[in-house]
Image (cartoon, rainbow, N blue to C red; front, side):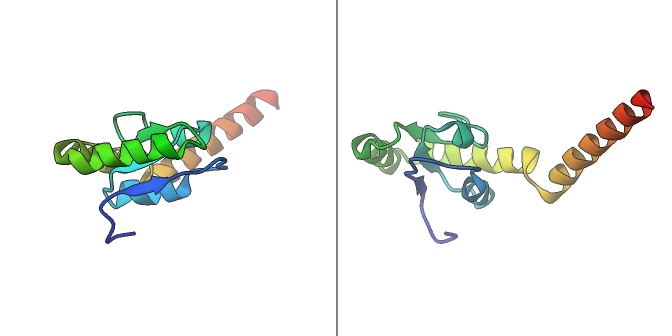
Amino acid sequence: MAAADAFALPSLWEGLGCVLIEALALELPIVASDLEPVREVVTRDVTALLAAPGSSEALASALLDLAKEPARRERLARAGRLAFEHSFTLQQSARGMLGIFQQALAHRRRAA
Protein backbone atom coordinates (compact mmCIF):
# COMPACT_ATOMS: atom_id res chain seq x y z
CA MET A 1 0.00 0.00 0.00
CA ALA A 2 2.86 2.37 0.80
CA ALA A 3 4.17 1.98 -2.76
CA ALA A 4 0.80 2.78 -4.37
CA ASP A 5 0.07 5.95 -6.33
CA ALA A 6 -3.61 5.89 -5.36
CA PHE A 7 -6.01 3.76 -3.33
CA ALA A 8 -9.28 2.31 -4.64
CA LEU A 9 -12.00 0.80 -2.47
CA PRO A 10 -14.71 -0.62 -4.78
CA SER A 11 -16.85 -2.04 -1.98
CA LEU A 12 -20.51 -2.88 -2.12
CA TRP A 13 -20.62 -2.90 1.70
CA GLU A 14 -18.35 -1.60 4.48
CA GLY A 15 -18.70 -1.89 8.23
CA LEU A 16 -16.02 0.67 9.05
CA GLY A 17 -13.51 2.17 6.67
CA CYS A 18 -10.36 1.21 8.61
CA VAL A 19 -8.43 0.61 5.41
CA LEU A 20 -9.40 4.14 4.33
CA ILE A 21 -7.83 5.50 7.52
CA GLU A 22 -4.63 3.68 6.58
CA ALA A 23 -4.75 5.22 3.09
CA LEU A 24 -5.24 8.68 4.61
CA ALA A 25 -2.25 8.13 6.88
CA LEU A 26 -0.12 7.14 3.89
CA GLU A 27 -1.22 10.30 2.05
CA LEU A 28 -2.77 8.40 -0.83
CA PRO A 29 -5.43 9.90 -3.08
CA ILE A 30 -8.55 7.77 -2.62
CA VAL A 31 -11.33 6.61 -4.90
CA ALA A 32 -14.02 4.70 -3.03
CA SER A 33 -17.60 3.52 -3.25
CA ASP A 34 -20.09 6.10 -2.03
CA LEU A 35 -21.28 4.28 1.09
CA GLU A 36 -22.30 5.74 4.45
CA PRO A 37 -19.42 4.11 6.41
CA VAL A 38 -16.99 5.41 3.77
CA ARG A 39 -18.38 8.93 4.18
CA GLU A 40 -17.74 8.63 7.94
CA VAL A 41 -14.02 8.54 7.12
CA VAL A 42 -13.61 10.59 3.94
CA THR A 43 -15.24 13.68 2.49
CA ARG A 44 -16.40 13.73 -1.14
CA ASP A 45 -14.07 15.75 -3.38
CA VAL A 46 -11.99 16.88 -0.38
CA THR A 47 -10.24 13.74 0.80
CA ALA A 48 -11.60 11.25 -1.76
CA LEU A 49 -13.47 10.80 -4.99
CA LEU A 50 -16.62 8.74 -4.47
CA ALA A 51 -18.21 6.50 -7.08
CA ALA A 52 -21.57 4.78 -7.21
CA PRO A 53 -21.34 1.36 -5.54
CA GLY A 54 -21.25 -1.43 -8.09
CA SER A 55 -20.44 0.89 -10.99
CA SER A 56 -17.13 -0.18 -12.47
CA GLU A 57 -17.55 2.63 -15.02
CA ALA A 58 -17.81 5.31 -12.30
CA LEU A 59 -14.84 3.86 -10.43
CA ALA A 60 -12.72 3.67 -13.59
CA SER A 61 -13.70 7.20 -14.57
CA ALA A 62 -12.66 8.58 -11.18
CA LEU A 63 -9.34 6.71 -11.31
CA LEU A 64 -8.69 8.01 -14.83
CA ASP A 65 -9.48 11.54 -13.67
CA LEU A 66 -6.86 11.16 -10.95
CA ALA A 67 -4.33 9.78 -13.41
CA LYS A 68 -4.82 12.82 -15.67
CA GLU A 69 -4.77 15.43 -12.88
CA PRO A 70 -1.61 15.37 -10.73
CA ALA A 71 -2.57 18.59 -8.91
CA ARG A 72 -5.91 17.08 -7.91
CA ARG A 73 -4.17 13.89 -6.72
CA GLU A 74 -1.86 15.99 -4.59
CA ARG A 75 -4.74 18.05 -3.11
CA LEU A 76 -6.70 14.92 -2.19
CA ALA A 77 -3.62 13.23 -0.73
CA ARG A 78 -2.62 16.24 1.37
CA ALA A 79 -6.17 16.89 2.58
CA GLY A 80 -6.44 13.21 3.47
CA ARG A 81 -3.26 13.31 5.54
CA LEU A 82 -4.49 16.42 7.36
CA ALA A 83 -7.84 14.70 8.05
CA PHE A 84 -5.94 11.70 9.43
CA GLU A 85 -3.88 13.92 11.73
CA HIS A 86 -7.01 15.78 12.88
CA SER A 87 -9.26 12.81 13.54
CA PHE A 88 -7.58 9.42 13.45
CA THR A 89 -4.24 9.45 15.26
CA LEU A 90 -3.80 7.40 18.41
CA GLN A 91 -3.85 10.62 20.45
CA GLN A 92 -7.11 11.78 18.84
CA SER A 93 -8.69 8.36 19.38
CA ALA A 94 -7.61 8.36 23.03
CA ARG A 95 -9.04 11.88 23.53
CA GLY A 96 -12.33 10.73 21.99
CA MET A 97 -12.53 7.68 24.23
CA LEU A 98 -11.68 9.77 27.30
CA GLY A 99 -14.49 12.14 26.39
CA ILE A 100 -16.94 9.25 26.14
CA PHE A 101 -15.85 7.90 29.54
CA GLN A 102 -16.16 11.36 31.11
CA GLN A 103 -19.68 11.75 29.73
CA ALA A 104 -20.66 8.31 31.04
CA LEU A 105 -19.32 9.13 34.50
CA ALA A 106 -21.07 12.49 34.56
CA HIS A 107 -24.33 10.81 33.55
CA ARG A 108 -23.90 8.17 36.24
CA ARG A 109 -23.24 10.83 38.90
CA ARG A 110 -26.36 12.76 37.88
CA ALA A 111 -28.44 9.56 38.03
CA ALA A 112 -27.14 8.66 41.52
